[in-house]
Length: 248
Image (tube, rainbow, N blue to C red; front, side):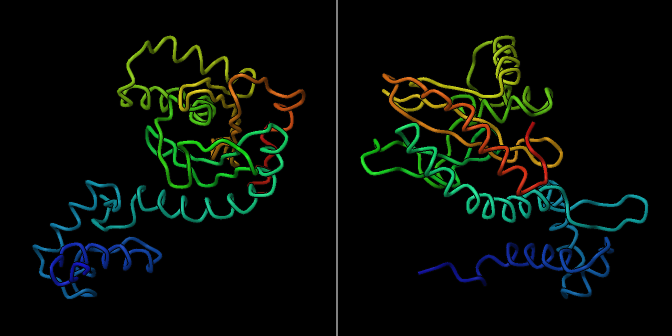
């Protein structure tokens, strides 16, 4: 049995505030929020403060109004972006997986982790720990490293500092510079025993990493001739179709 909405009124009221702000084009006053939703004054300010602390609401100091915060926009962006990306990447990932003789993955960054949006496995491919919705530490995966290498340095450093992975920041930064210079990242048996991965970023119109394409194959094997170029070409084609950017 699910939890009755009457048992979590604060959560429902917070969602109602977010829905109200999403329907109005400009920031609005707390008084209007109270009026529209029929909320007590103290409840309104309490919920607004909680939502601001979480980044879902932002306060405009100049006129003491409230609008959607960065976290709300990031959530909307993730939702609106990942489904088209998955559709665009599905067929090319199957082709890449067959070419490499392994499994293909599409993932995006989420804090210090990556989350898998799509995974394809040709018949006979080895079963892996990865799957749609699975999260793994970004610093351990080829996909995570490929995306981190294309973030501004201060953002990549923040991910490293909060990842709890240990190691040397200097070595981490040197690895990202190398990845950025060659255009692809790799890992060998850091995620699954006996498996290696190579990955490239899919960049958006701001040349930020929107996602990563990766292929996982036997660590006993080698990257097939032309494999990296094929992976890069595929990522560039998806970037061009999604964002009008070639990824170069």
